[in-house]
Image 1 (cartoon, rainbow, N blue to C red):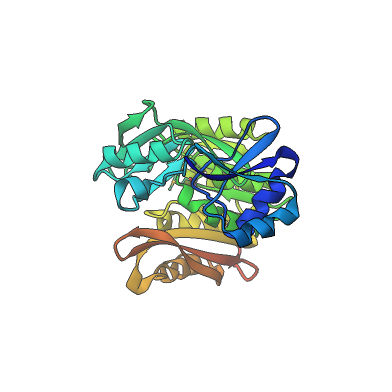
Image 2 (image 1 turned 45 degrees about the horizontal axis):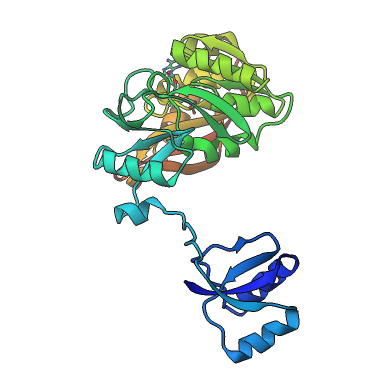
Amino acid sequence: MSLGLRVPRSSGERFRKALVERELFDRSRKIFSDGTHVYLPVLGLDQAALDDLSRLGPFEPADRDFLPEEIPLCPQDLLGFSPSFEQVGDIAIVEPERAEEVASALMRCNCSIRTAISPLSDVEGEFRTRRFRHVAGEVRTTTVHKEHGLRYRIDLGSAYFSPRLGTERLRVAAQVCPGQVVLDLFAGVGPFALLMAKKGARVIAADKNPAAVNFMRENAILNKVELEIYEGDASEVALRYPDTADHVIMNLPHSASQFLGLAMRAAKDGGIVHYYTFAPEEDLYQDRAIIEAAASRLDISVEFLYQGIVRSYAPHRFNVVIDFRANKAGQAGGCSQD
Ligand SMILES: C[S@@+](CC[C@H](N)C(=O)[O-])C[C@H]1O[C@@H](n2cnc3c(N)ncnc32)[C@H](O)[C@@H]1O
């Protein structure tokens, strides 16, 4: 039994608020009703409090078996530490260390997680995918992830996707205007491309991974946006669109430098290239020199517009972005070789 107040239902909320304001309401226990009256759990009542509350209307002190309030647990309460994990749709990607324990805590605390997987490899190969092992819940690597009002069907086992780039995608999208042409050379399942298309841009999106391209097609339909999708090598696609793009997105950090010349050719005069790379913390923007060298081979002048860290990648290494404008006005005619 614990202490409570019995008040008519019609004045229940008034009394509850008054108890909360006076720090007398017992949050660890549940309010209940018998139909005509509600029972409010209280921490204590002295004569002064009773006199004070009597101004709100009729009530009577009542000892009752109040049920304990279920306080939501967080994984830290269960584990004793705060686990690092990434959530994509309803899948939690947990670190290999103590994976089972972490997965079980996450699934107890977060009902939106139905599956837990753990990486068996880094992001690897041309298609930038990871291998995973199943840890808990439903056995699958497919899910639907929501980002910026769009939905993405994804298979983490066969195509690249990282929710950690969500803020970066918004930053780039903010620079894109309706009617502009965007060339996304390494589009994956389409998270940059769809966001730009939703803004009214004409988006040409390429990827070499057939699985990623299939998901990108599906995601365009799912979100009712139009994309011009190519399955194939970015260099072939870029060559089809000389001097065309207002924005070229080069999200292939481990080897984007190899495609710089092609990307600059595809940019229109004054077009902006969004270039991603990995760099050591002591020289985050070292690739500016590579960009300038590639531009000078094409007789293009480069104007650096923005540089920033997108996310940490490994100890002392970061995924960085460099935005630059490709100015071609002074370009000599003819065909230059990259
Ligand atoms: C780091 S992922 C980025 C995907 C997407 N932009 C995103 O934010 O989720 C790089 C993508 O480039 C694709 N790729 C790698 N080499 C390529 C190439 N030569 N031509 C076209 N796509 C390529 C991979 O298949 C992968 O989907």
